[in-house]
Length: 456
Ligand SMILES: *Cc1c(COP(=O)(O)O)cnc(C)c1O
Image (tube, rainbow, N blue to C red):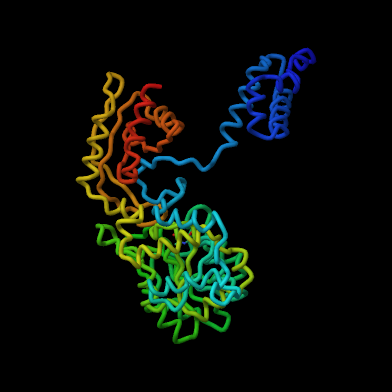
């Protein structure tokens, strides 16, 4: 053993390798040296009498691989060929060009983020977005934070600390990514009171529970699951009537925040923020990066008096939205005011993509995949989904390429780790590239990555 340990190269011997000297010119010499030390100590701690001790060349290769993998820009861009439009693992909604440029412009220099240029006095980063949200939804005011989970936490902390929050038993759920309504309630200092049953809840059930300890009524859109069959849930307007008559605010978490009507695209209805406000919700909550198609954000709209309570709460500071997201969100909202959302916002471009166009693109791509005895590619009709916890069970007809290869898992791994990574899905033992979620400008890159992964 001692003999083995003695064979491990020294730090200085690895440092003298030319590959390492190259790294030292590009990166901090100290950081590279630390990496070598870590690598050597890892070898030392895992060595046993059977192990082969790596050579200097092998160690410098390991260090160089580590640097290439980890000390480069991240997250990397990938081509989403899964057919899932809002894919949380792939960063949810891609931004419109205009939104992306607004984020860059706002951050590459100083801005009037919290300064009123006219008076020279301190301003609010929320004033502009609040007005835009009002114009779009008819709400009195709006407020934005980091994400919808934070928005709900803030809403409950500001309006229901130490009080009861009435929630239907069918809605005390987990929304995904560990966001559980009962836990969020606990963390915000509110007390959960569940009413009704898992499948049926009536206004009467809420009414029976109201008392002097009631803080708010909370209604949560069941975004990522569906209870079908013998079900009942009161409408927001019924709940609002109850809330108004008893002086209890009604909070409505609509989740994806679709400002457009999903039924126009052949999909099931998704609750829209403007409808929630029209139905009388006191506050309505939604995400910025789901069907709104903007950056990560949590958006609250509703009554001015409640919005003010939220904005004055200490958590509002902790959940503050940053200027890049605020700029991108502002520009995303303006797309809706210009009635150009469908043409400019990528998630809506994808949802509204014409089947004929998808078929033509699939055909073009498939003809450019070199043929072989080892694999075959053909155009197939497929089904895309919305994802991101929106419209569960709903699919959109789409077109894609079906690639039959010997080992689909292995091919998927290859193309995910290609120079231009592609994330396909595997179905019926074949690799599927669904074109609905591939940006048209990426078609050539997709072809190149497929060709590369077939050859290597
Ligand atoms: C997605 C979702 C959330 C969480 O929103 P984030 O922006 O991811 O924090 C909360 N409620 C509902 C109903 C959702 O669909």
